[in-house]
Length: 111
Image 1: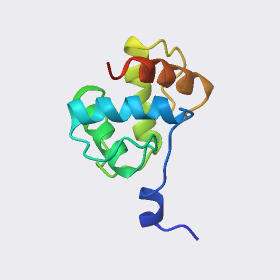
Image 2 (image 1 turned 90 degrees about the horizontal axis):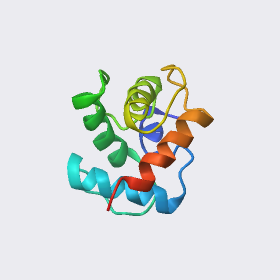
Image 3 (image 1 turned 180 degrees about the horizontal axis):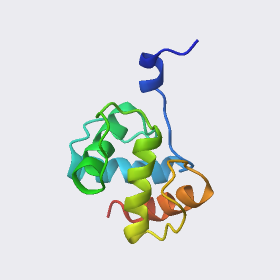
């Protein structure tokens, strides 16, 4: 059985490679208070920083808990639809379209 504590420690790169995830971590460190290492593994601290971004700019209303649930994904989809070519529904499912747009974001996330 997986507990809530186990779920928050889970790494979820949403299809990103290690180097792409490191770019996202760089962005999160520069702009959203992430203090973890650039290890290419989007875990709790990375997703908490992303949730702060999504809460401030993209309508995320859930807790800053680092869990990549449907609310986090919906807000991420809104962000990706704005500038990163996501054209799918805002459905909270991180399918291939969401992952492709997240890759485009990651490619330019950190100079």
